[in-house]
Image 1 (cartoon, one colour):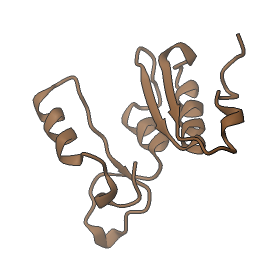
Image 2: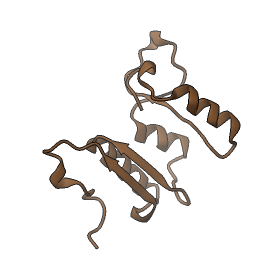
Image 3: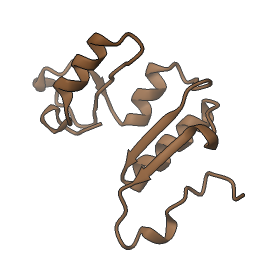
Image 4: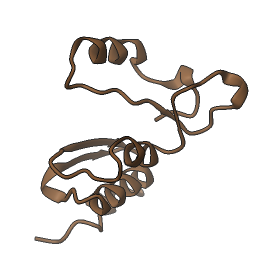
Length: 111
C-alpha cells in the first residue's frame, strides 16, 4: 500500500512476476489516490484491499506483513476475522524506540 502510485516499491517488478507466475498475485492499493490520478487499482488501506480481493476469507493462506504498527494491527484484525490465525501470520513491524516495548501483537494469544 502507498498513498500515491510513485510510492509503490518495485511496482514494475511485481507486475512482471505476476505476469510470469500464475500463483502469484500482485494487488497494489493506494490510500490517497485522487480521481484525477488515473489510478484504476485498489483504493484504501491494505487490509481493506486484501479483504476485498479474498472475499473476506483467508483460510488456507499465509500472510507476510511488514510496515508501521497501526497497519500491521489493522491487517492482523482483518486476517483473523477472515479465519487466518497466528501460526500463519508473519510480521515485521517498522518500530520506533517508543514502539519497541509492544513488539508482539496484542491480538495474538500469549503462549
